[in-house]
Image (cartoon, rainbow, N blue to C red):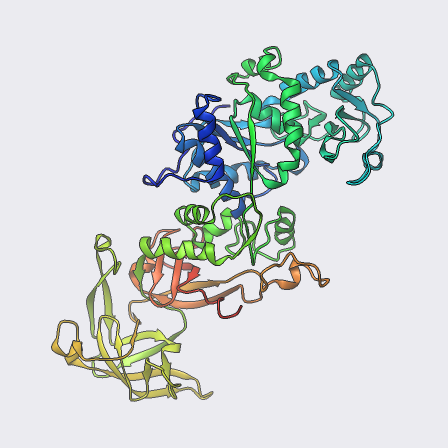
Length: 585
């Protein structure tokens, strides 16, 4: 079951300044006080869906802290609810963690510990700390009480140890139907913390499990399985989001009452599985979730969007899943930069998505080579060049980094330029091409537009111009002052490409707000994806899938990881050069 690999820290990060958030300070204090000889963390997702941007924070924190303090981090699949879990999600989770730049010490499953958890439950029964309850789910809710009123004890709470053991073993044997009985902790029905009002530890579910098949007709509840799984694995610091803060007393109750570290007989089944015995008492620490505006990150809503075909799947580039944003062109470095900027706190808040987009711009500005592409083309014919004229111009691949080298870009008599770079009647301040006006063609010289050719509908189909022969690169006329510069691609050599122009999936900052009787479905952005046919220079067409570029003057784009080929390129817009939504707010 072990899938051991090296470091828990990012595989590609250079040394970074020491981080000083409150969680790392707790870890430092625990190590200094000798509470732990080393640090061990875990990332424990439930495989009931694809990971999303919010999980990136937990991944970076769990693996990052382990790596920073010379410890290790396990990946543990919390597979205690087989009705909603799927091996497809398991594989995607592993792929996402590795894509982010991390690897785990051991790959574990909560189901690895089912026998241990069962024996621990029997121990609780023998201690008088757990009982089998026959109340239905509705009756349990009625007995639980409210935030202002205490609950009432179950009429089955005082069953004898012998009766509880007998019933629990019969539950284990599959004798009872789903929902007929539960095993509940015996804590305090008058507690101000509702989580301590005799919570369920086991429920009956006759559902086949992806790892254990039909061996178990009963499954442990999350709080019980999670706390004891942490203890079994020797986790020192169990990092959770803030919604688990009220569950921490139950977490500690389970760990303390079972006392795996002091119960070698309970962990004996681990040895039979070849798993190391590392039982200890973990410390749960909570931090704020990562929430961005213009997104929904509820797994239920994301699943609904996929099933109702409101998006093209879990890896649709508009989705906030890690699979989706990876296809959009987000990079692991950008996500780690975003997590560092957001920081770790105890205060939940809705963050501006510009933080995420800004991190991607910053990363790609440094890491992405430049290419030329035209996404709304109109032809420009340089009439003073001979028919068949073509030449190769030399361009830098990155204006800020000489290590990217240079490339050869074909130039010919007929070019594609952006339609918006020409105005027949230019508005005030327009600095690009106009009839009778001049503009600099990027790296090629200065051109003047002499003629506009239109079709019968009055649409511009071609521009005819004159290239100043004294303004070619390296000539004296090249220094002549011209206000505007535009990009281009050679019509003879350019490769037609599908350009997918992705934008935010929702039109409002908080699509989860249902105060006006609307749901997130009412706020979906009809312009969140447009596909156009554009032209790219040959050096862009030959890109590998998932290779990112800055298309000069347009934005950052990535070659689609599935659909792109050099013969028919497909590029997804990752992010615009500037925040185009800032003016809409």
